[in-house]
Image 1 (tube, rainbow, N blue to C red):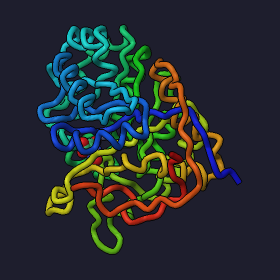
Image 2: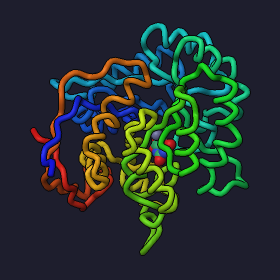
Image 3: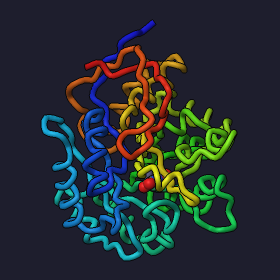
Image 4: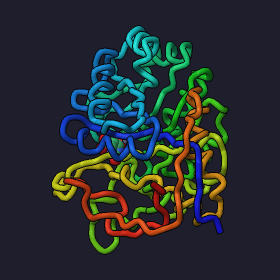
Amino acid sequence: MTDRLTIRRPDDWHVHLRDGAMLDHVAQYTARQFARAIIMPNLSPPVTTAEEGAAYRDRINAAVPAGLDFTPLIVAYLTDHSSPDEMARGHDEGIFTAAKLYPAHATTGSAHGVTDVAKIMPVLERMADIGMPLLIHGEVTDHDVDIFDREAVFIERTLKGLVRDLPGLRIVFEHITTSEAVDFVTAAPANVAATITPQHLHINRNAMLVGGIRPHAYCLPVAKREQHRLAVRAAAVSGSPKFFLGTDSAPHAVHTKEAACGCAGIFNAPYALESYIQVFDEEGVLDRFEGFASEHGPNFYGLPLNTGTVTLERGETLVPERVGEVVPFHAGETLGWRLAS
Ligand code: DOR
Ligand code: ZN
C-alpha cells in the first residue's frame, strides 16, 4: 500500500478568492496548497477590464502570506458589452489568462453575465484567434428548466453550438456534475476540457436534503443523483487529459449560508488536496492523481508545468467545524490523508 505520494506542485484551475476581508482570510489556504490558481472574476462589481484585472491581481498578491510562492491567474468576466479589443489587450498585456462566461443570473455574482451568447460571438471569435481560453458556467437559467437539469440542457441549447461554430476556441466546461457533461467532454475534440470539484466527487444531492436541509452542501451547479456522481468520479480518475482539478472553492460567511435564502458555494480550499487524493485512493489509482492535479490543466492551458513537489501521506486530518467565519467542506470529518510538512 502506498503511504506517501510525492507529486509535482498542483494548480487550482477554478477558485473564488473574493475581495477585501474575505480575500485576506482565504488567500492563504489556496496559496498554501497550489502554485497557481485561476481566479474567478465574479466580484461586485465584476472584473471586466484589464485595469480592474491588474488591480485585483495586486490585491491578491498583497493578501498572500509572505514566503508562499503563488501566482494568481486572472480571468475577465464577460458581459453583453465586452469588447474584442479589451479582451485582446488584457490577454496581450499578460493580465487575463482566460475569460469566463456566466449566463446572466445562473449563480452568485452573475447578474452582469451574458444574456445571449450571440451577443458575444465577436469576442469569442477574437479569443479563438489569440488563443485565449473560454471558461463556462454551463447552466441554462430558463425558469421552465428544473434546476437539476440545467447543466444537461445547457449542453444541448448552447455548448454544442459553440463547440461546432468555434473549433479553434479552447473551452473549459467548469465544475461538471452530470454524466451528460462527462460524455459530451469525452466525445468532444481536444480543445474542450472540464474541471471537477471535490464536492461533486464526494456528495450527491442526498447530502443536501436527507435528514434536514444542509446549506453547506449547497453549491451551483447543485449536486445531482448518485449515478452522476459516479460518472464524474470515473472521469476524474480515468487519466484522460480532458479532466483536471478545479475546486470551485466559494467561501460565504456562515450567516449567509444558514439563512432563509442561503448562498450557493462550498468552501473547500483548506483541505482540497486531502479531499481529492482520498477519491483517487478509494478508486485504487493513486498513480493518476498527479496527472489530474498537476499536469492536465497546464497542458490544456498551454502553460509550463510547475517545478517543485508536494508530498501527501496517509494519516488523519480532522477538518474543523469553522475556518474563521466560514464552514469548510468536510467540517467535522476526518480525512485519511494529510499534507506532509
Ligand atoms: O456555488 C457556487 N458559488 N457556484 C458558482 O458558480 C459561484 C460560486 C460563488 O461565487 O459563490
Ligand atoms: Zn465557481
